[in-house]
Image (cartoon, rainbow over the protein chains, first blue to last red):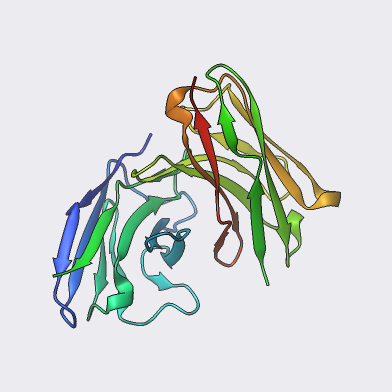
Length: 112
Length: 115
């Protein structure tokens, strides 16, 4: 199985400041169809998860443009350009290139 | 509006079985793959299983392979997760999620495996 490793585990951020979360996979996430299937999900306290980003850098509808994704191969990053109070959540990367699908362990973003 | 509602959770003894339901509305059920994902108390997300949009393909995580089975009834817009030989470490909130233009998630149903 593909192991997804996120860092850091916890990320205290000052409101209005940027935040960056790393996600590394144990295998390349480039599918045989040429796409790279790396998703980012947000789970706010007490809520179900919500997908933010798909195929590395594509924002889902309604996702603020302060969220961006980048990376390639086995190394990916989720960036929040200016953290707002509503961004307090746990963020998970998930690979969709290989069965079984696998999630990273999560990164908790909190306000400093 | 896409909506998914899980039900069937509860308290069950180790070794017993439970069947969870995922009922969909607001979209054509047979158009999307449906996933099951769980979250143990205070832990992260764990992907469990998927049924393809046409029902022809199923995949399972190693942790549940051979114990859990997905099935569906298109006429009822309902998908089930049959869970057999339950273990204490299966205790979690179980979510179903549809994979269409985005992922839509239900609110989850809590399964507690305890003697």
